Each structure stands twice: as structure tokens, then as C-alpha cells.
Image (cartoon, rainbow, N blue to C red; front, side, top):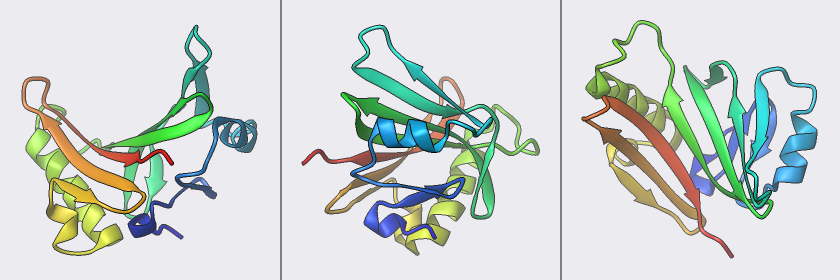
Length: 141
């Protein structure tokens, strides 16, 4: 179950939340061909990314989970819908807003930023690159 109001997102049956660490996620996805772990040369930073779109509720997303020193920093989601023109960031924003409204309710789902005790959810867009996404950022304890 997704409980995004509490900072919990279930991805491929795994609950990802504020206290999720890289070691746990790496072990959880070791046999999952949909994900790949990439460590940067410093070995302090890493990302776990989807290799193909992942179903999260009613929509499919590309997923990237970022870590620093084994501690989760955040999750980036981008809607992956072949019917959307890749240059139409407004439609991507609309799809993100629909999904967030399903997860955290209205009107919060259509706001550009929602701050919670555990972190914040931001809808963003870049008109120059015609890209848009959702960032789920976790505050560090």
C-alpha cells in the first residue's frame, strides 16, 4: 500500500521510506531485472534506477532513488506514457498531478510543493528541456 502522506512509496512490493538504506534496497532488488544500482566512483553516492517503466498505482513511471552514504535522499518519478508527446511537459505535469491527487488527495496533489514532517513532495518542470517530474525528498534526521 502506498501511503505517500507518511513518506512511504511501495515499489515492486518493497516499501521505500525515510529510513530505507541502500544496502536493504540493493538486497531487495538483487533478482529484479527492472532495477539497477549505480555507485559513483567516490562510493558515497549511489542511485537505484528502473530500467523500464514501473507501475505505481494508475500510472507507469521511470524511477530513480538517490542515496548518500547509504542513506536515502529522495525519489524521482517521471511519468512514462507512450501516448504523451515527449515535448509536452504540460501533459506530463497533468499526469503527475492526477497521480499525486490519487495518493495524497485534493488539493494537495495539484500543488507544486507539499511539505510534511518527514520531507517534501515537489512537482517540477523545465520548459527548456520540456521535461517534468515528481521529487520526493526526505529530511535527514
